[in-house]
Each structure stands twice: as C-alpha cells, then as structure tokens.
Length: 276
Image 1: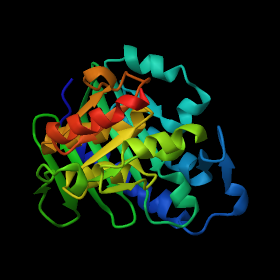
Image 2: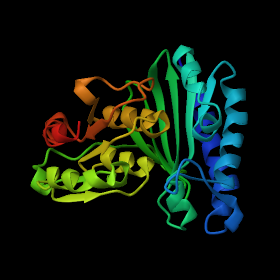
Image 3: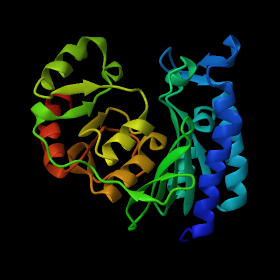
Image 4: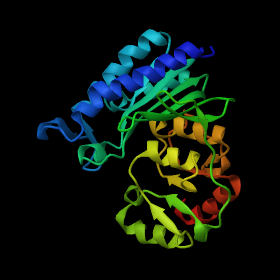
C-alpha cells in the first residue's frame, strides 16, 4: 500500500496529541514509583512511556488497521513482534519517549519517533519534539521537512562535508564495555567534538538539519533508526550498516554509521575498524 496524505496527517496528529496529553503533563512531574528499570540502570521506562505507547497504538490501529504495531515497550514484553514485523506487509514502529533517561531527569532532550515500514522498507518517518511541538518528517522520495504548527514546511539538509578535525559526532560510549572505552575514544581522537545526548530523535534531527556531522550507534533497534535514517537520506545524507550493507528496519544486529555525506561516513568507518 501507499500511505495517503490523510493517513500521514492523522499519524502526525496522533503523535502530537499524545505528546501534549500523555507526555508533557508528566514532564518534571513524575512520581518516584512511576520510573522503573528494564534491562539495567541505563534502560528506564516510565508510566508516561507506557501510556503514550498505548495511546499511539490504539489510534494507529484505526488509521492503519492492517499494520503490525511495533512499540519499544511492547517489544520488551513480546520480542516475537520483531519477527512479525519482518513478515508483515505494513508495520508501524514507535518509540513513545526516546530519551527516557533525559525525560525522567527533567532534561528537555527527548522525543517521539514513528516510522511506517512497507514490505521491509521505511516509507514514512517522523521525529517529534513534544517540548516545542515541532517535528521533522520524510516521505520516501519527497525530501525531508521541518514543521511547526501554522508555518509552511521547510526543507532540511545536512551541512556540507567537513574534515574530522572540524566535525561534531555522536558516539554512545556507555554502549561499550568499560575496558573498551579508552580504545574507542583513542580511535576517535581525530574528531573535533564527540557528544552523546542519549536521544536518537534529536541526534537524527541535528544530522538532517545541518547541526552535526555523524553518529555511530552500536545497536540497531528499529525504533531508534528506521525513521531517522529515512529522514537523513531524504535530506541528502548517508547511512550504512557494518560491512557496507544498506540499512533496513529488519536488521537488528550490528552497528550503523549515519553521516552528513558519504565522504564523512567513509572517514568515520575508517576510525571504526578497530571497534568491529
């Protein structure tokens, strides 16, 4: 199927409404017992995550009733959904609050990610900031655009190629074993600035809109990358998985490099060879 403009508008509106009804009322207003640990202390979930995911799942079932819903929190309880997504004609992938640790700490660096996958290919991606109620979205083949309510869409584009000694990149050091972190940082010494904002939504927004040069992620969770990679590529950027493989949402093992352009991505790949 091909998404209609009405379905796309409805998906955006669902995410916006959920942000304002389920997420923002809980920001800096969480009860202590509403934050729980999942796999480890770095992997948190809040009651707001779960409520937001339920709201989006209920609404998207009406917009795309044939789609398999793949939410980060749902998959934590039902990992077999990843297999169902691989077999489905249409899937909706959602991270209700990407950057939960920031959200729980009262830091305004979090967002909602939504992607629609059709026959294994991401066809629509949305990176939504509920704090400022704005978003970047992409429809395959139609470019990437920044939107704010009441304003016309504005095309986004990555910034021009930079040498690594001028580049800013995102690298989540705590995804590496403690004994490997010194080696990782030494490998990336040529880069001017390394950060980790703990939020794929904003990292991809910054890449696609020319505020950063690359990211390297050691995990391939589809709710972190499906929407962001489509948006980056539609904006004019570049991405690949280990070994030069094209990214698809059905790849769940390996790491991804996403960059403003192929040249920067190739340089980051060369730095990353010692990490494989």
